[in-house]
Image (cartoon, rainbow, N blue to C red; front, side, top):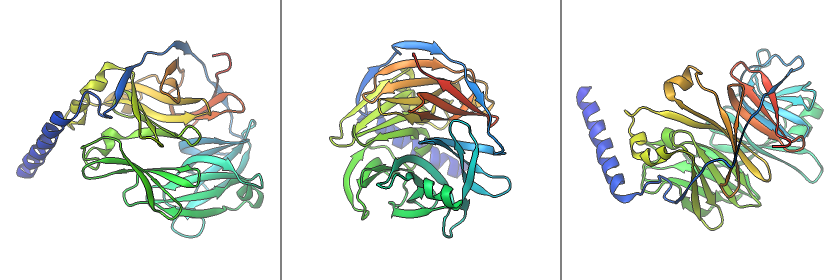
Length: 347
């Protein structure tokens, strides 16, 4: 057992030594803009009540038109997606049970929404375990009080994240010698491939290189707020151009951060977006303090070019966020599964 540990440490050392010689001060291998917020504020959240929903263990939130979608497990119906009306938060139904059958998924992650030609709200869902993407017809599900789910595409093996991109899909795949962003068409064919973290074994360092991501089709941008490195990366999905907004000097220590024995910090843990802005949930806490919930989070607001516009201190420990563009407010789920509304009007 000791011998195996020594071998593993030796291999890790060799890999890191090789990395030292071929990469610069930015793990993203892009020009770095040292960012300090143009404006700083503090805001207080307004607690909003969920009417008769009885939800616990909420892990995700998404605003879709006049509804909020919550990702969790329903105590009585075992559903994973729960819909509440806006602004009243009345219960509109519970959908998508866990399984491999019709209208079931194993680990759904809500990514984005759109409207079809008939005006129905459609939700794009990526299932991490099934490595596939799906479309949930939200409007039809509510009308019939029954899950209306359509399979879209099987994604490349090892995909850890996926987003709609017009009629195509943006997928992120850690590989043995790279960490890749690809664009695939409706038939599953790769039409573009871009390296995110060159020469790094993505499979080895998946957790350290993970990020909260946002995609904008019109702007052709992928924004990645990194979990364990204090920086936000912007990738142009058309040209492959890269840039980085670094919010702390510790971004230079990425080699040490990749060392599993180093003391880790948690930086960005969530993201949401509007047509103009990207809003990232920022903790900046030692891993052990983050686990013990001994920190106070911020919202960092960037434009899609990576300019750091606002640093907003929150009054609640939020674990997931979603922006309501029509109401110009942000909803957040705190560690006690309570929903809070944050109004950004005037900021």
